[in-house]
Amino acid sequence: MDTELILQNISRHIQLDKTEEDYFVSLLQTKYLKRKDFLLKQGNICRTENFITKGCLRTYTIDDNDFEHIVMFGTEDWWVGDLFSFITQSPTDFFIDALEDTEIIQISKANLDRLFDRVPKFERFFRLILQNAFIAQQNRINQNLSCTAEQRYLGFIKKYPQLEQRLSQKQVSAYLGITPVFLSMLRRKLSRK
Amino acid sequence: MDTELILQNISRHIQLDKTEEDYFVSLLQTKYLKRKDFLLKQGNICRTENFITKGCLRTYTIDDNDFEHIVMFGTEDWWVGDLFSFITQSPTDFFIDALEDTEIIQISKANLDRLFDRVPKFERFFRLILQNAFIAQQNRINQNLSCTAEQRYLGFIKKYPQLEQRLSQKQVSAYLGITPVFLSMLRRKLSRK
DNA sequence: GTGATTTATTAAAGTACTTTAATTTTTATC
DNA sequence: GATAAAAATTAAAGTACTTTAATAAATCAC
Image (cartoon, each protein chain N blue to C red):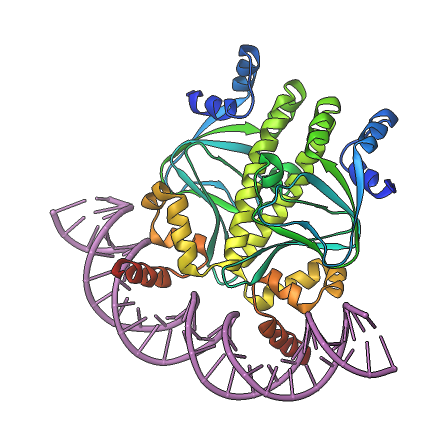
C-alpha cells in the first residue's frame, strides 16, 4: 500500500512517532474504484472513512424528479464519506461514485474507534479535518445565499482551477445548483467578454 | 453564574467528574447582550466560543448591495461563534448580533486550549458538537440545491417550529435566501390552501 | 399614548434561471 | 475505427423569484 500521501496529510495536523504510524497503517485498507463504480448508495450504511490517493469522487443526492445535486467533490488528498451515516451507523441519504478510476485508502468504524482509544491524538486530527470541512461548507452556504449563478461559477473556477478541468460541465452545474443549459449560456457570455 | 444548562449540554456527550466540572466552570464568563447589541463584527477577531442560555442571536454577512444573509440562528442551548476566526485568530467575515435580550456563557481561546490540555475529553466534546453542526450544514446545502423556496420554507418551520415564532419574516427570508416580499407571497399562497 | 420607524402586504413589471427540443460535438464501447 | 451514447450548444417559451412602489400593520422610543 502506498501510504506516503496519507501520512503526509496527517502530519500536516499532528505528529506521529514510528510506532503510532505503523499501528495506524495496520488499520488501513486499499480499494480501487472504476469510473462509475459506487462507493456508497442511498440506504446503505457508510462503514468507512475514505482518503483519496488518486482519481475523483462525487457525493450527491437524487431528488424526486431524478435530478442529481452534488454536495461535494473529492480528489487526491481529500477525505470523503458520509459522516452522519458513519457515526450513527444508520442509512445514508447520499450516493458516492467515481468520476474517474480512483484509488482510496479506507479505515473502518471499528478500527477508527480503536485508533481513537490507542492514539488519542487522532481525535484531534479528525477534529481539525472536520473544522476545515465545516468552514468550507459555511462559505458555500454564504455564497449560495449572496451570489448569482455567474458569481458562484467564477468563485468555483477560482477556488478549484485544476478540478474544473477534470469535470464535465454537467457535474459543475450539479454542484452550482443550476442546469447544464444555463451554465453553457453563462460560459458563452463570459467568453465573449 | 447559572451553569445548569451548559453542564447539561455537555453531559449529553461526555461525562465529567466533580473536579473536572469545577475546573471547566472556573474558565467561564457570563455576558449579557441587549437586543441589537453585537457579539461580533466583520473584521474583528472572534475571541470566545459562546453558549446561549437565554435569547436569540443571528450570524450573518452583508453583501455589496447591503443585503443581509443569515448563515445561522442560535438560541437557548446552542453554541455560536465564528469557528474559522476563533481557531486562526484572524478577522471574521461575519456579524453576530442579538435579536432579543440575550445571555451567553463564554470561554476564551486561551482557556479552551488549557481545557483541552487538562481535560482531553473536551476535545471529544467539541468534535461531537462540530459533527452535528457539520451534518446540519450539509443538509442545508443539499436543500438549497434541490428545493424551491416554498419547500425550504416548509422545511424550516417544520424543523424549527418554536424558533419561527420568535423571528420576524424578514429574518426568516434572509435565512432562506429569498426576499421578504416573496416570503410574504408564499405565506399567503400556503394559507389559502 | 403619540409620532416615528420598522415590518408586512399587495400588485405590477422585470430578470435570472428552467424547460423543452433540435443540432452538434465529444466521449465511450466493442 | 465505426457506432452508439453522453455531453455541450443554441434558441425560444415558460416560471420562480426580484424589484419597485404604494399602503397598512406592528413595534419602538420618548
